[in-house]
Image 1 (cartoon, rainbow, N blue to C red):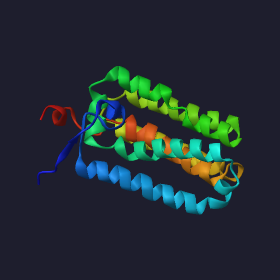
Image 2 (cartoon, rainbow, N blue to C red; image 1 turned 180 degrees about the vertical axis):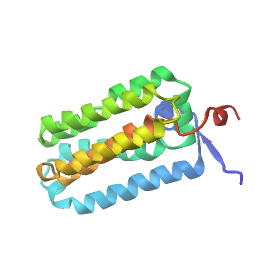
Image 3 (cartoon, rainbow, N blue to C red; image 1 turned 90 degrees about the vertical axis):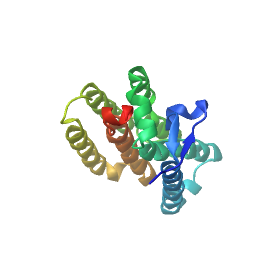
Length: 188
């Protein structure tokens, strides 16, 4: 089956790579919108109590995290970063969303830094082990341990932050740090 591809404008290469299958792009957009609606409905009382600027910052951070969770699994984004080792390290380094969310919402900075630190340390380990056959298994184990940690703090954190923290871990530890497409696929 021949899937149509879309050339991605240079400004969006870090998000989607240089090209994406139309179906993958549609899935990223669909997931981001649908999950955003669901999360907004489930947490509406909390969101309505926020100031307008808090909602805007939270929306932008949510779109980045939710879109990235799925985009990083796609061939276009994954292969873009497979061929740019420095870009991989920059990507990991700039992901500070849990800290920003906690700061904007007045959440626990200690918990936010814990989530961020664990996630970044895990992503660094997985990135260093990109060529190892056990990389996906280790990433799955580290992600699962992190999600268990999120459950353990769930009584001390607002639901919207729990969702964002979980998606952040999935995005950075497994969706991004793991090499999902083989080297052969890059050249084939």
